[in-house]
Each structure stands twice: as C-alpha cells, then as structure tokens.
Amino acid sequence: KRFIKDTLFFDAKGVAAIKGKKNIPSGVYLIAFPSMRYSSFDVILNETNFNITTDTLNFIKNATVKNSVENQEMFEDMKYMLPLGQENDSLQKLIIVIDDKESPAFKALASKIDDISKKIVVHRKAMAKKYPQTYYTKLLKIMLDIEVPTPPRNKDGSLVDTFYNYHFIKQHYYDDVDFADSGIIRSPVFQHKFLKYFDSYTHPHYDSIIVAIDSMLNIVRGKNAEMFQYCL
Image (cartoon, rainbow, N blue to C red; front, side, top):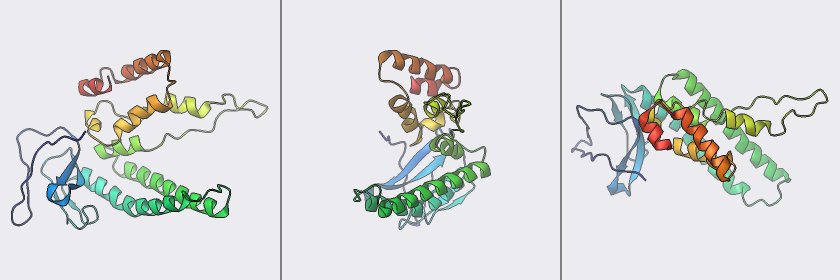
C-alpha cells in the first residue's frame, strides 16, 4: 500500500514547502493531487534544502530541479524513458494481435521492441556511471538485469552446466543490492525484485523455500535492522 506521510498546502503563487528539524526517512515519495484525480509525480527524499518546479500539464517533462543531485538524476532518467515507454506501448499493441510468430511483421516489431530494451540498458548504465554514489543509482542497478557471462564448455563443445544461466543468476541475484540502505524499501523496485527471487529462482517445495529464506536472511543479517525486518 501507499501511505500518507504529510499534506502540502499551496499558496496563491503555487508554492508549497515542507520543513522540519528531523529528516524524513530516505526513499521515493509521491506528490499526489486530490483535485487532479490523484495525478502524481515521484520525488526522492535523500537530501535537504532543495527545490523542484514543474507544471501540471506534464509533471516530468516540465520539471526543473535545484540543489538535488538525486532528483536531477531521476528526472533526467524519466525524461529519457518517457518517449521510449510510449513507443514500446504502441509496438506491444501491434505485436499482440499477430498470431504468426514467424511472420516478417512479427519479427520486425520484436526487433524494434528489443532495440528499445537495449537503449534503456545502455542509458541506465551511463547514468549509473555518471552518478556513482546516489540513492537513485542503487535503484537503477536493481532494475537492470544481471549480465550472464558466456557459459563454460567441455572439450567437445557441450555445456559444462546446462542450467548455467539459472545457477549464475541465482548465485549473483543480490550482488547489486545495497542492504545497508533501508531507503530502497521505500521505492517501487525492490519489492518486485525481492519477490521474483522466490517466484522464479526458488523451487516451490518447503525444503527449497527454507534454504532460500535462510540464505536470503544471512545476506541481510547485520547490515541494517529495518531492512532485515522487512525481508524477514
């Protein structure tokens, strides 16, 4: 669920401020407008004394950020993603009605969709390199798929492990997750990755589930009390 943290009141000039002596726990928060059917945009709270200006016609496209590297990175990423997301949605609507998966039309659309995915990966890797120490980069790394190296082969060319990709991903699934930062709990990406491990990489039998849970908690244990509680 999404919970209400606070209420902002705008003055006649469209300005609202939130101030306090104690920092709000870091994370991704929504600024939602009840008068606009709860239309909203994301804001990262991990810094103090920053300013975001935007226009209700398009929150993301019209956003200007001052004194916040975190939000600058996030809005930069979202502005890049917006047209790609719209293009991808259009292509998905076209490809879903094609029954023949071997037809030239299907293959052409699939190729375009794949190109969009590759552009996103290249862009987000560049973002992570540009902003190596930020909270938002931690989220980008969670969103990126794990890169699996070329599997080892025997002298006859056969695979040493026919399930190499599966085993590699399972072994390195949490390599890019910073469990010392409980702020990633308050984001739209960590829960999905967390649950996917048990849905896709854990055999649905109690013996396997127990092993997976123990392994998971051993990774988190001692890193951050809030994160440990959440995962448990």
